[in-house]
Image (cartoon, rainbow over all chains, first blue to last red):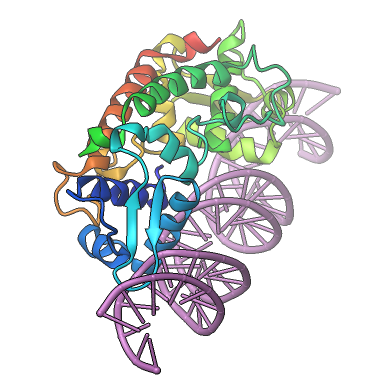
Length: 135
Length: 135
DNA sequence: TTTAATCCTATAGATTTAATAGGTTTTGCA
DNA sequence: TGCAAAACCTATTAAATCTATAGGATTAAA
C-alpha cells in the first residue's frame, strides 16, 4: 500500500511541475487544489526540500518550487525518500537491504526469488518514469 | 511491504508443495523448518484452509495438506487472501476497489495512472506464477 | 513593525500488524 | 474407555507505524 505521505508528495510535486513559471507556490495553494491537510503537506514538502528536490522561500510571497526540471526527477527517487524501499521485502532491496531473521539461505528462498521479479518490474517503471511523465 | 503473514503463508504452502506424499504435515513441522512462530502459523493456515487451499486432519497424526495441485494455485490468489489488494492504491484495485476521498477525477490523477502500470506488471507476475514455480 | 509565509519538533490518536493466550474439539491408539 | 496429540477458534495484548495536529520560531516583504 502506498502511504498518503507518498501519494500527497507525488501530487504536490506534479502540481508544482505543472506551473508555468518557477515562482514559489504557497503550501495552501497546493493543499487546497489537491485536497491535502495543510499541516501534513507542510512536513512532506519539508522532507522533499531537505532531499534537494524542492527549494523554498520564506516570508510573504514565499513558497515552494522545483529545484530541477521535472524530467530529471525519477519517481523512484521520490518514492524512496517518502515511502522507503521499493522492494516488498527488505532482503530484496537494493537501497535498504536487510537480512531476514527467518530464512537461513536467500538463494533457496521461494519468496525471495519471487520478490526479486516484482522489484525488478516495479523498479523499471519507477526509474523510467519522471515527474514530467505524470503531468 | 509484504506482511509476515503473507510471507509465512507462502513459505508454508511451498513447504507443503515440496512434500512427496500428500499426507498431513503438522504445524510444528512447518513452523520449525521455516522458523515461524507456531501459534502465528496456526492462524495463517486456518485462513488458507477456509479459503479452500488447504485441507486438515485433526487429532493424533493430523496436520495440513494441499487441496489442489501446486500448479493450480496462483500466487495472486494467495496474496489476495493473506495480504489483500495487489494494487498499491485502492482506486486502482480490481478486486478491492475504493474511491479516493481526495482526488475528484481518477482519469486525470497522475498517481492513479502510474499505479495502474505497477499493478498491471505485478499482477502479471502473480497470476502467471504458481506455487509449483516457487519450489 | 506588521503580516504572511516557511521551519521545526514533539506528540496525540488511530490503525494495523505480530504474536500470544487459553481453552474446545476431534481423533488415534494403547 | 481414557489419554495424548493434534487442529480449531476467538479474544486480546503489545508494538509499530501512519496520519494528522499543535504551537511556537524564524524569515522576509511591504
